[in-house]
Image (cartoon, rainbow, N blue to C red; front, side, top):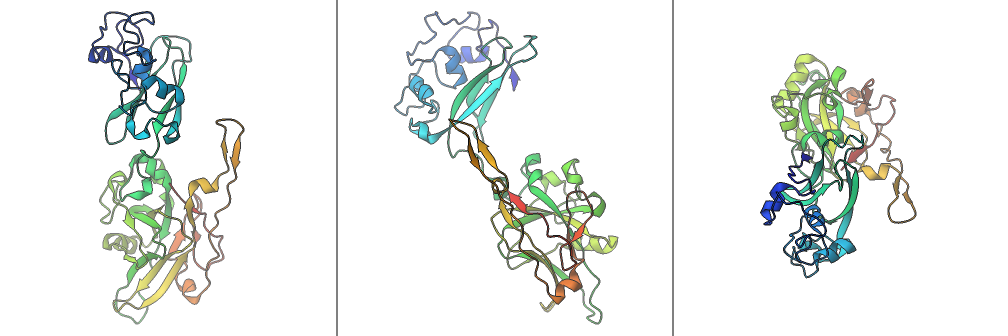
Amino acid sequence: MERLNDTRVDMLPDGWEVRYGLSPCVRAMPDSPNWDADNDGLGLFDEFRCCTSPSNTDTDEDGVNDGTEVAQGSCPSDALDNGDPANCVTLKLTVGDPSGSNSERWNMEILEEGMGKAVVCHCDDGFGTPGSARYALVKGKGSNADHADYFINGRRDLTDLFPVLVGVAPAITGTGAPLLYRIRQAGGAVSFIYTSLDTMNASRYRTHDITGCGAGLGTPLLSANITLVSADGLALSDAFVRRLGQTGEPGVILVEGKASSSAPLILDAVLPDGTVVASAVLPMRVAPVEQMYTRVNLRDGAAVVTPGRPCRPPPAARTPSLCMASEWMRRMHGAGTPRCAGDCGSPAPTPVSMR
């Protein structure tokens, strides 16, 4: 959102008028000769809001008149829709000052990610009076899903993460060798971030900027890399395991769903010769978040209801190794008391969402 610089209060920013050869010192009016100089059916105000040229009948050169595109619901500034509304989605925006003070006016620009190109410049159609308008945007031009890369996508990504407590046991008596701790997941459907959080503050990342993250525990969370958990497994970082040994308490990794899967998250204790001496299993199910909620579409006629459904993890396997390692990996349920993820009689953890 930005404040408009509009000398003559004609709803057109001064800079936009200069760019297209109009004078910001002359108030544009619907009955002025240059209101629709290109005869495409759009006045200057609509040309500004739709990011079209007031001197070009077909701004995106897709063979369809700008005014026709706006009327039919296609995008007049993007040729990738081929002038067909079926290739677009509709965005409704409302901007204004509902207080009635009429003291200032603002506009809202929608930019194409990575290009910096404005595709909508919405503003109210009266000085301070809230106004709404609908705009067509070309389908399929959004950014990749947050889970499709290996870094934090700003604060919006933090809502997709959930904390898992990871604890390691002392070396097995008589082995005389240190253990390697390996995390794996058969579906390759999750990734995670190392943190310096612990049992008492496992959810602090939701409300505070935290540091001490990443494999070396020396990076701010918003700059930390995300590590994919493969089916073959990944050894926990030395810095993370060392901290667990120093504190004697479980540490926290933040896990993100990447693909649909019902395979559990597994922590193995491995000897140098590759022998797995114990494992802890965290049952889980990863599913698109929209499957977990009932959705109601109120647009274009009668409401369409798509029911959600529970996405519960499968029952935990019960094997002797889970008893040995039942305290090695635990799942935090919100900010409450940690619960075991192994064979310790606790409820199954909540499902993982992905976006």
